[in-house]
Amino acid sequence: MKVAVIGAGSWGTALALVLISNKHDVKCWTIEQSTIDDILKKGENTRFLPGVKIPKEIFITDDLYAAAHDAEVIINALPSQVTRSVVPQVCKAMECKNQIWVTVSKGIENNTYLRISEVINQAAHISLDRIVALSGPSHAEEVGRNIPTAIVSSSVNLDAAKIVQDLFMTPYLRVYASPDIIGVELGGALKNIVALAAGICDGAGFGDNTKAALMTRGLVEMSRLGIEMGAQSNTFAGLSGMGDLIVTCMSRHSRNRHVGEEIGKGRKLADILGEMVQVAEGVKTTLSAYELSQKRGVEMPITEQIYLTLFKNKSPMEAMYDLMTRASKIEDWGS
Image 1 (cartoon, rainbow, N blue to C red):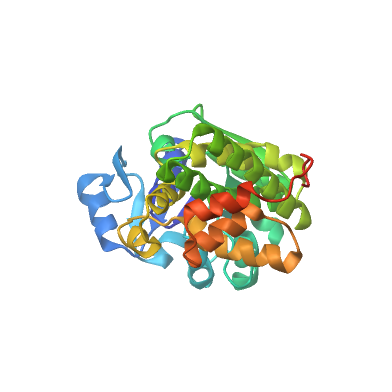
Image 2 (image 1 turned 90 degrees about the vertical axis):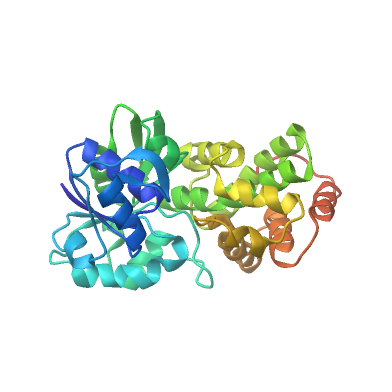
């Protein structure tokens, strides 16, 4: 198939490598000339995916028409908060209007509280039955090196999800299909908040017990908000929920865990983000999720404390104390 990858960061690049290994026609678009130069001259995306060779068969350009005009599948690999501004430009560049759109962004749009599939639907008038979310425990640094990985392809249209499943399936990338796009997208977005908490736990010098508690209770919060938004609870026990939560809270590759760790050491958020090459989606998603939980009346104490730590200068020690001294409860999925 003819595939356009919009965004040549680490994940967009890794997915392009998967697609080219499956003999698809792959074109990548980016606005960053330095990335284009690196790929063309060095055969490597040194800024976003260093050490991984990129074959010449992958076409790279800053021209949206050249990348997308004849594509049958569009991969949205842009940061969540810029998707709305770019997607309409992609649509203008396309000749065919029946493409499948695949979003691999993991976030919730600020102010609107929309999932990224909903942003694409609203901003570009793309029918939801042609939009697929691809998510799960999948660091680009490992997928780009053919390390065995499993992810989920999800859509309200299961046939579309299965097309994308087949598009990406390889001996080292196993893809499952799911009709619960709400749960899959929210799992991928909300786990980044818990990863920030796990990183703070590491940076502040708390222990493994603490991180295990944060991850477990964080999963409860993810499910709680997801169910309120119409997701299936069992989705959060799967790859896009628990699976992605585990890898993002534990991995050295995790940008969100890194940000949390630096916060836990006492550094300022602006300084941390200012020195990062890639986007830590969990920071802005924390703002969306906290406001959404308040709007919907969903109790999310970990999310609330991360919000206060990131945006209201609350100390990690005080945040942990307030979590630990909440009123006693019976443990169940809703408490």
